[in-house]
Length: 184
Image 1 (tube, helix red, strand yellow):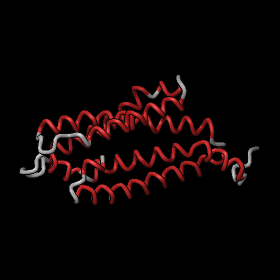
Image 2 (image 1 turned 120 degrees about the vertical axis):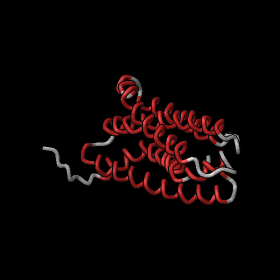
Image 3 (image 1 turned 90 degrees about the vertical axis):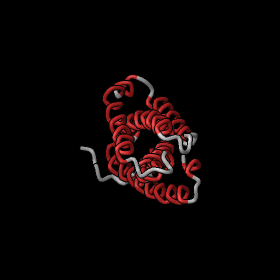
């Protein structure tokens, strides 16, 4: 019977050395995801600087972010088991990153045109972000010994929570100082 309380530090160091890029990518995704949610009112003001907050449009952006993430895992999740998980994670990260970078090129004061622009790139970000979690679970099950999986996901969630919190602060500071493009 396997000793699930094993503290074999060699196994722990081994999988952490292999999976450190996963922690890193998780952090950047969390900063971006959290920023979109946390900065939703300032984003509305960027699009419509002279108008009140467009709550319906901003709520639609958040909804599309969540739905695109949820649906993509269902629709494309089978590809993670079919192809190289490492390559899929790299592709996911590239498209997530490009989508967020493109948000920084939105036309300030563009109104509905800027909103559609955000909608498209938030959808792309959400779709690839939704594939991230199944890919990480699959990859970690291949690499992390069973006795260390809870620890791995604990560290993974700590990284996600801390970076999202720092993302709130960094995003708020940049937006407040008129540097919203630098956040994205």
